[in-house]
Length: 142
Image (cartoon, rainbow, N blue to C red):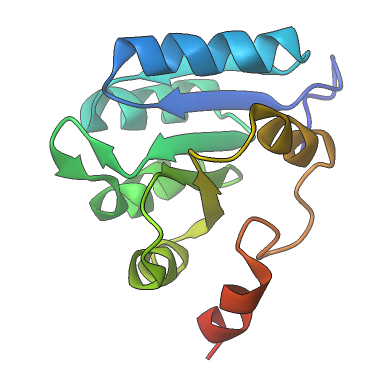
């Protein structure tokens, strides 16, 4: 999954808040992770995913007033090899189940230490539910 030329994961960030995108980009790039695109709405996200073909797409749960889970299938179609992660501050299990049902591989919580995100990217995400809290992973496969 990492870029064969550089060995780095290629990440795309989707969030409608410019400061959040910039902060995530700085965090990831400082850790040696390549950010290939940043989008602030559905149309940009789909177009950039198709053009850049990132390895991982990190999407805020709500983008530009829209539930991002409604366009995850479109992003997965545009970049079929990319793994989609939902970034959220919400802890409602139903939303996380829905995220997996529409094609996301997991959920990243905003209240976690930044190092948690970096370590997870560094380990390359091999597991289907590697980004979901363990107690919830079992319920997602039912």
